Amino acid sequence: MTIIWLKYSVMGLCFVLGALLHARLGLSQAWYLYAGAGLLAMTQLLMGNVWSAYSALKRGQLQQASRILKQVWAPGMLLKRNRAYFYFTKGMLALQAKQLDGAATGLEEAINTGLEHPNDGALAALNLAHISYVKQNWGSAAEWLEKARSFAVNDLMIKEKMSELEQALASRQN
Image (tube, rainbow, N blue to C red; front, side, top):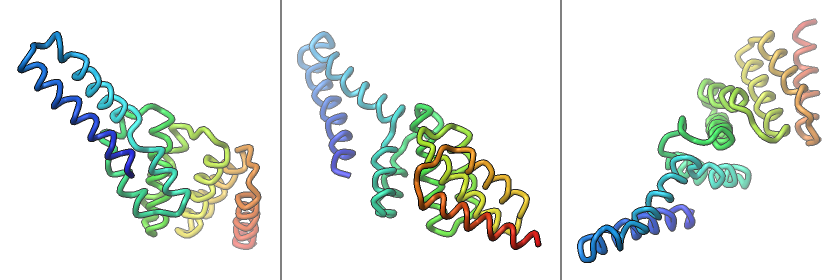
C-alpha cells in the first residue's frame, strides 16, 4: 500500500515542481518533470495497482485487496494481462463476499480476457462451476468443470476440488 501512495506522491511532486520551474524559467526547463508525471500517470492507467491487489488477495488480505483494486482508474484501458487479473481478483473478492453474480461476471471476464497461469484459469473455471452448482444449474456446472479440466493444472488442491465437484454432479444425475 505504501508503494501505491509513493507513486501518487512522486507523480504530484513532479507536476508541482514542473509547474514551479515552468513559472520561473519556462517550459524548456520544466518539460522533463511534466513528462515524468505523465509517464507515471500512464503506467497507472495501463497497469493500475492490479498486482498489488492480486498479491494482497493471495495473502488473504481481502479488505486491502479491495481497497487497492478500487484505485484502478479505468479497467477497460488496462493492458490485457493486467485486465485479466483485475477481473480475476475482483471476481474472487466478490466470491468471498458471497456475491455470486458479481463473482461470476468477474471470473468469466478474466477467463475470456486470458489468464496467464493455468492454475488461475482452472481456479476461475472451477469457481464458476461451483457457482452454477449452487444455483442448481447442473449443465452449466458440468461445462465449467470441463473447462477447468482443460487447463494444465499442477495444484493438488484444485485437482481435489475438481474431483469433489465431479462426484457431486454425478450424484445429482443419478
